[in-house]
Length: 176
Image 1 (cartoon, helix red, strand yellow):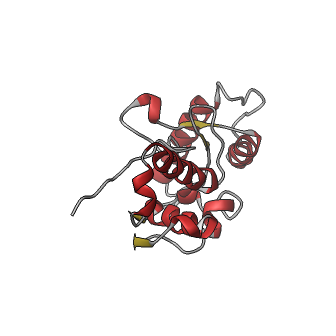
Image 2 (tube, rainbow, N blue to C red):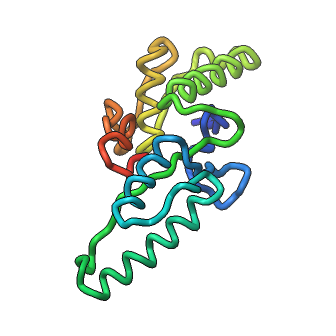
């Protein structure tokens, strides 16, 4: 039987790191990040009056040196880590909206295909994906169920994890 597949360059596609620079997110330090870093620097009596976006890396490198020295003197446990953060800024001027716009982009791509090729309207529309792709497939089914005949989901989440939305506030840096 015949199959048609499409890949959509969707909104906020560039939210993760990539080996292709134009598709890669940027890490930046926003006010909340700088505030957290300042608090940690003060804890180690490191001057931070000149802490800014363009000096934060050198401050963190110095913090690392201080912590290494304290570990060598057994004043800090060898495996001790401080939690610092940066914020991922999507390239292309996109903003993070947790998949809503990406799902709508997929729906619009399907609508465009049906408009250009009317015979597609009668074919089953089955969305599939793993992890984020599965999540998007489920969002598409939620937003426009009349455009969905099936979802094949491999490890997508039914609801977004709270950590993905407010991970920074929960001190869960692996999620933001």
